[in-house]
Length: 231
Image 1 (spheres, rainbow, N blue to C red):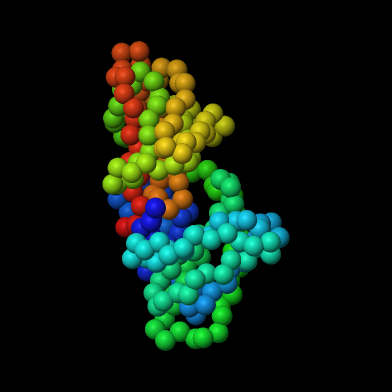
Image 2: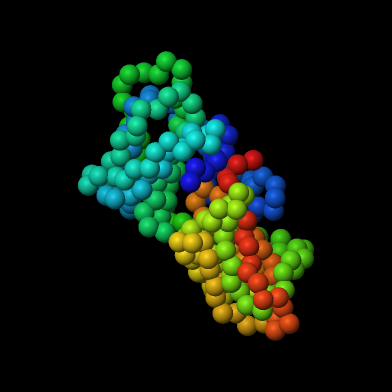
Protein backbone atom coordinates (compact mmCIF):
# COMPACT_ATOMS: atom_id res chain seq x y z
CA UNK A 1 0.00 0.00 0.00
CA UNK A 2 1.47 3.29 -1.03
CA UNK A 3 1.52 5.62 1.92
CA UNK A 4 1.31 9.39 1.45
CA UNK A 5 4.10 11.12 3.33
CA UNK A 6 4.74 14.63 4.49
CA UNK A 7 5.54 17.06 1.70
CA UNK A 8 9.10 18.11 1.03
CA UNK A 9 11.51 17.62 3.91
CA UNK A 10 9.33 17.79 7.02
CA UNK A 11 8.60 14.11 7.45
CA UNK A 12 9.03 12.59 10.86
CA UNK A 13 7.07 9.58 12.07
CA UNK A 14 7.68 10.51 15.68
CA UNK A 15 5.16 13.26 16.32
CA UNK A 16 5.04 15.58 19.27
CA UNK A 17 1.27 15.45 19.46
CA UNK A 18 -1.82 13.46 18.48
CA UNK A 19 -4.04 13.75 15.46
CA UNK A 20 -7.57 15.07 15.79
CA UNK A 21 -8.28 15.73 12.12
CA UNK A 22 -5.68 18.47 11.88
CA UNK A 23 -1.99 18.38 11.07
CA UNK A 24 0.12 16.89 13.83
CA UNK A 25 3.16 18.71 15.12
CA UNK A 26 6.29 17.09 13.79
CA UNK A 27 9.97 17.61 14.21
CA UNK A 28 11.21 19.21 11.02
CA UNK A 29 14.10 17.20 9.68
CA UNK A 30 15.93 18.65 6.73
CA UNK A 31 16.32 16.36 3.76
CA UNK A 32 19.91 15.35 3.12
CA UNK A 33 21.37 15.93 -0.35
CA UNK A 34 21.88 12.71 -2.26
CA UNK A 35 22.73 11.27 -5.62
CA UNK A 36 20.30 8.94 -7.31
CA UNK A 37 22.48 5.95 -6.43
CA UNK A 38 21.88 5.28 -2.72
CA UNK A 39 23.13 2.65 -0.30
CA UNK A 40 21.78 2.59 3.27
CA UNK A 41 23.18 0.61 6.17
CA UNK A 42 20.77 -0.17 8.99
CA UNK A 43 22.09 -0.57 12.52
CA UNK A 44 20.57 -1.84 15.75
CA UNK A 45 22.48 -1.03 18.93
CA UNK A 46 25.48 -0.15 16.81
CA UNK A 47 25.55 -3.42 14.86
CA UNK A 48 24.51 -3.93 11.23
CA UNK A 49 20.98 -5.35 11.13
CA UNK A 50 20.41 -8.07 8.56
CA UNK A 51 16.87 -8.67 7.32
CA UNK A 52 15.52 -5.23 8.26
CA UNK A 53 12.77 -3.94 5.98
CA UNK A 54 13.43 -0.76 4.03
CA UNK A 55 10.59 1.13 2.35
CA UNK A 56 11.22 3.94 -0.14
CA UNK A 57 8.61 6.63 -0.79
CA UNK A 58 8.54 9.63 -3.09
CA UNK A 59 6.69 12.43 -1.33
CA UNK A 60 4.09 12.83 -4.06
CA UNK A 61 2.42 9.59 -2.83
CA UNK A 62 4.52 7.18 -4.91
CA UNK A 63 5.73 4.02 -3.22
CA UNK A 64 9.05 3.31 -4.90
CA UNK A 65 10.37 0.08 -3.44
CA UNK A 66 10.33 -2.47 -0.63
CA UNK A 67 13.70 -3.99 0.29
CA UNK A 68 15.46 -6.02 2.95
CA UNK A 69 18.99 -5.48 4.20
CA UNK A 70 21.64 -8.11 3.43
CA UNK A 71 23.84 -9.90 5.96
CA UNK A 72 25.88 -6.70 6.30
CA UNK A 73 22.81 -4.58 7.05
CA UNK A 74 23.01 -2.91 3.63
CA UNK A 75 20.17 -2.16 1.22
CA UNK A 76 20.86 -0.85 -2.27
CA UNK A 77 18.00 1.40 -3.37
CA UNK A 78 16.77 1.50 -6.94
CA UNK A 79 18.00 4.44 -8.99
CA UNK A 80 16.24 7.53 -7.65
CA UNK A 81 15.03 10.28 -9.94
CA UNK A 82 15.12 13.93 -8.79
CA UNK A 83 12.75 14.62 -5.91
CA UNK A 84 12.23 14.33 -2.15
CA UNK A 85 12.25 10.86 -0.63
CA UNK A 86 11.44 9.25 2.69
CA UNK A 87 13.31 6.09 3.60
CA UNK A 88 11.72 4.03 6.37
CA UNK A 89 13.51 1.12 8.05
CA UNK A 90 12.05 -1.32 10.55
CA UNK A 91 12.91 -4.53 12.35
CA UNK A 92 9.94 -6.41 13.71
CA UNK A 93 7.30 -4.36 15.50
CA UNK A 94 9.53 -2.62 17.98
CA UNK A 95 12.28 -0.78 16.11
CA UNK A 96 12.20 1.80 13.34
CA UNK A 97 14.17 4.61 11.71
CA UNK A 98 13.49 7.21 9.05
CA UNK A 99 15.61 9.26 6.69
CA UNK A 100 14.75 12.10 4.32
CA UNK A 101 16.67 12.61 1.10
CA UNK A 102 16.65 15.15 -1.71
CA UNK A 103 17.91 14.16 -5.14
CA UNK A 104 18.49 17.36 -7.14
CA UNK A 105 18.20 17.86 -10.85
CA UNK A 106 21.33 16.52 -12.57
CA UNK A 107 22.55 14.59 -9.50
CA UNK A 108 26.12 13.42 -9.09
CA UNK A 109 26.94 10.03 -10.56
CA UNK A 110 28.79 8.85 -7.45
CA UNK A 111 27.01 6.69 -4.91
CA UNK A 112 25.63 8.20 -1.68
CA UNK A 113 25.89 6.14 1.51
CA UNK A 114 23.74 6.73 4.62
CA UNK A 115 23.39 5.06 8.00
CA UNK A 116 20.10 4.47 9.82
CA UNK A 117 20.03 3.57 13.53
CA UNK A 118 16.94 1.64 14.57
CA UNK A 119 15.25 2.99 17.70
CA UNK A 120 12.42 1.60 19.83
CA UNK A 121 8.95 2.32 18.48
CA UNK A 122 7.98 4.69 21.27
CA UNK A 123 4.77 4.49 23.25
CA UNK A 124 2.60 7.52 22.46
CA UNK A 125 2.47 10.41 24.90
CA UNK A 126 -0.20 8.94 27.16
CA UNK A 127 -0.41 11.92 29.46
CA UNK A 128 -1.00 14.28 26.54
CA UNK A 129 -3.57 11.91 25.08
CA UNK A 130 -5.49 11.68 28.34
CA UNK A 131 -5.50 15.43 28.82
CA UNK A 132 -6.87 15.91 25.32
CA UNK A 133 -9.37 13.08 25.71
CA UNK A 134 -10.87 14.69 28.80
CA UNK A 135 -12.51 17.26 26.52
CA UNK A 136 -13.52 14.75 23.85
CA UNK A 137 -17.05 13.31 23.85
CA UNK A 138 -17.74 9.61 23.93
CA UNK A 139 -18.41 8.75 20.29
CA UNK A 140 -19.54 5.14 20.67
CA UNK A 141 -21.35 3.07 23.29
CA UNK A 142 -20.55 -0.58 22.68
CA UNK A 143 -21.23 -3.94 24.26
CA UNK A 144 -17.69 -5.15 23.61
CA UNK A 145 -14.40 -3.88 22.31
CA UNK A 146 -13.85 -5.18 18.82
CA UNK A 147 -13.29 -3.45 15.52
CA UNK A 148 -11.18 -2.86 12.45
CA UNK A 149 -8.45 -0.40 11.43
CA UNK A 150 -8.94 1.21 8.02
CA UNK A 151 -7.35 3.94 5.94
CA UNK A 152 -9.19 6.85 4.36
CA UNK A 153 -10.21 4.75 1.35
CA UNK A 154 -11.75 2.05 3.53
CA UNK A 155 -8.94 -0.44 2.95
CA UNK A 156 -7.89 -2.40 6.02
CA UNK A 157 -4.61 -1.56 7.74
CA UNK A 158 -2.95 -4.69 9.13
CA UNK A 159 -0.89 -5.02 12.29
CA UNK A 160 -1.67 -1.60 13.79
CA UNK A 161 -0.57 -1.18 17.40
CA UNK A 162 -3.46 -0.27 19.71
CA UNK A 163 -3.08 1.12 23.23
CA UNK A 164 -6.11 0.96 25.52
CA UNK A 165 -6.37 3.22 28.55
CA UNK A 166 -9.36 3.41 30.87
CA UNK A 167 -10.33 7.04 31.45
CA UNK A 168 -9.20 8.04 34.90
CA UNK A 169 -6.15 5.78 34.85
CA UNK A 170 -3.39 8.31 34.22
CA UNK A 171 -0.62 5.81 34.87
CA UNK A 172 1.12 4.43 31.77
CA UNK A 173 1.53 1.08 33.52
CA UNK A 174 -2.24 0.58 33.47
CA UNK A 175 -2.39 0.75 29.69
CA UNK A 176 -2.89 -2.36 27.55
CA UNK A 177 -1.31 -2.92 24.14
CA UNK A 178 -2.81 -5.18 21.49
CA UNK A 179 -2.21 -5.53 17.75
CA UNK A 180 -4.61 -5.73 14.85
CA UNK A 181 -4.33 -8.90 12.76
CA UNK A 182 -3.56 -9.24 9.06
CA UNK A 183 -7.14 -8.29 8.19
CA UNK A 184 -7.01 -5.15 10.36
CA UNK A 185 -9.33 -6.61 13.02
CA UNK A 186 -8.79 -6.38 16.76
CA UNK A 187 -10.60 -7.28 19.97
CA UNK A 188 -9.99 -7.39 23.69
CA UNK A 189 -12.26 -8.08 26.69
CA UNK A 190 -12.90 -4.89 28.67
CA UNK A 191 -15.05 -4.27 31.75
CA UNK A 192 -17.69 -1.55 31.64
CA UNK A 193 -16.26 1.95 31.57
CA UNK A 194 -15.05 4.77 29.33
CA UNK A 195 -11.84 4.18 27.41
CA UNK A 196 -9.29 6.08 25.38
CA UNK A 197 -7.69 4.17 22.52
CA UNK A 198 -4.61 5.24 20.57
CA UNK A 199 -4.01 3.59 17.21
CA UNK A 200 -0.53 3.76 15.71
CA UNK A 201 1.04 2.28 12.59
CA UNK A 202 4.08 3.35 10.64
CA UNK A 203 3.28 5.76 7.81
CA UNK A 204 -0.06 6.95 9.28
CA UNK A 205 -1.01 9.67 11.71
CA UNK A 206 -1.83 8.53 15.22
CA UNK A 207 -5.56 8.39 15.94
CA UNK A 208 -7.40 8.66 19.25
CA UNK A 209 -10.88 7.31 20.00
CA UNK A 210 -13.06 7.66 23.08
CA UNK A 211 -15.81 5.11 23.67
CA UNK A 212 -17.84 3.45 26.41
CA UNK A 213 -18.28 -0.23 27.12
CA UNK A 214 -21.70 -0.96 28.65
CA UNK A 215 -24.17 -3.84 28.73
CA UNK A 216 -26.78 -1.66 26.99
CA UNK A 217 -24.35 -0.58 24.27
CA UNK A 218 -24.57 -1.39 20.58
CA UNK A 219 -23.45 -4.76 19.26
CA UNK A 220 -21.20 -3.49 16.48
CA UNK A 221 -17.59 -3.02 15.52
CA UNK A 222 -15.54 0.07 16.26
CA UNK A 223 -13.94 1.55 13.15
CA UNK A 224 -10.60 3.34 13.47
CA UNK A 225 -10.01 5.46 10.35
CA UNK A 226 -6.35 6.40 9.93
CA UNK A 227 -5.06 9.25 7.81
CA UNK A 228 -1.76 8.97 6.05
CA UNK A 229 1.09 10.96 7.51
CA UNK A 230 0.52 14.15 5.59
CA UNK A 231 -0.67 17.69 6.31
